[in-house]
Length: 201
Image 1 (tube, rainbow, N blue to C red):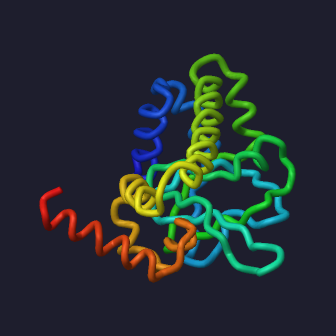
Image 2 (image 1 turned 180 degrees about the vertical axis):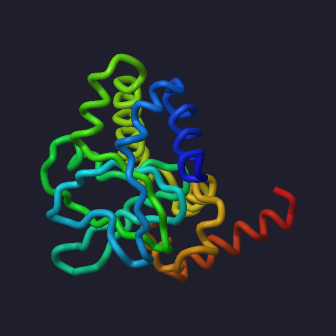
């Protein structure tokens, strides 16, 4: 078994409690793909046809503001997370967002038609589909609530909890965009957090 298959096997079992038989049934449908830094998993106005698991790398989901043409980062996804533009995927309508690799990356993905087929097979795949839907609904709701209820510093700490080494891997302006702040504000946040740690808080 390759390292990629081992990671796929581990994540599928942990995420949806899939059996060895469930996983084995799905293996012919997964495709490994390398995506170079700066290249896209999916682009705006294209239908998102694949659900992927990230083996290596960080991706950002972003849109371009129609008036200012400024890029706005909405989500980051990294190792052992599923990657998809979920609304586009389930409706098979064009995506509103870009999904771009911020590092040289490797994914393993299953296309929409094959996943629909897996849902019809007795076993755990229907449960998997429900859990993926719940996961991406939770991402969407949580992201909205972060901007309603959390300070930029709280959003930064949550991001670090989800992606512990992200600040060492991607450019600071990507993180600022994700947090909805400017670079100087992020510098102040990082300084405050370091001071708290130094004081033992």
